[in-house]
Length: 367
Image (tube, rainbow, N blue to C red; front, top):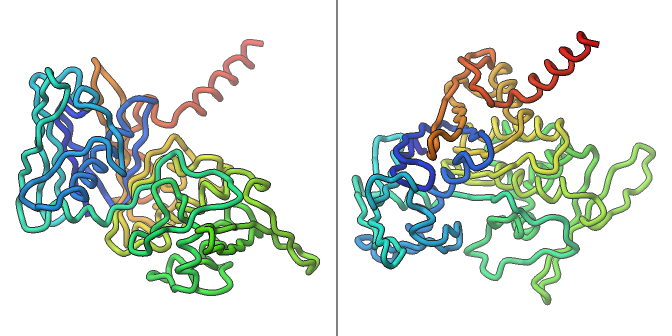
């Protein structure tokens, strides 16, 4: 499990160390550095996956996990030297990272110089799963993976239905994550039950067309009068189901010890659905490490409720609130007590609803 990330001269971070817990929530205004934190981890994952010689790490800013442009795009504009560092420390104290030198003439970063302590540094990040904010929305068909060795839900969730087909009957590794409405203990039934917490009564049907390398999913909804459910194309049931199903699938099926990076998991979801997703994240964090970038107070409050109800230990959740000052990112880290109360409330940290209500009350008194 990741314990901390240190960034020096990386994008908006001049020098910053961020602590991680089983659940780490990144919040803040737009362009405050939340995505940069995830991109730093993805860049390390990308470097590791692109390295064939463990003694020679190759840099790839335009790879399968993140596309960061040129050296000028990643070097902090307020850097006091043309050097950039990304270091990670794991829970057992092992620290590793990479250091780049920037060549302004060619606008590129020189080959990284790794600092390797221990025998298994960057390779630990190979268990990282990433679901980006721009996930696949409703479509009539979805692709089948061309290589079962690489099967997963994909960074945009495009392979979710193929993954569910392949693993539909596999039981959850942690029975405490089983949803009470699941009809069987298999992955597909469990994913369907958790999706039902977002859209009650939802049913999933997936048909494989191997000749065309396609999966055709449909959604139905249970009725109370024993009438058979009609099934509809994803394009006829809205974005919420298609956007949240990859997240549910990853949280239920990822191997213990995996690192899960989620961007805007609340997208297209009703507030109740966001709260239910927060509960699943809390339960999944008992066996996974989950980093969430979000703008949702419902997701944040859902984690607070999970702490109060004993589903998540207060010491296992880290809130990181990012803002900008004098051209670079800064971080504040309120902690939680056993009742889900914050140690302090940073200015701008999910406080807009309270500000709006205060303004409405103030105007009413004046009238």
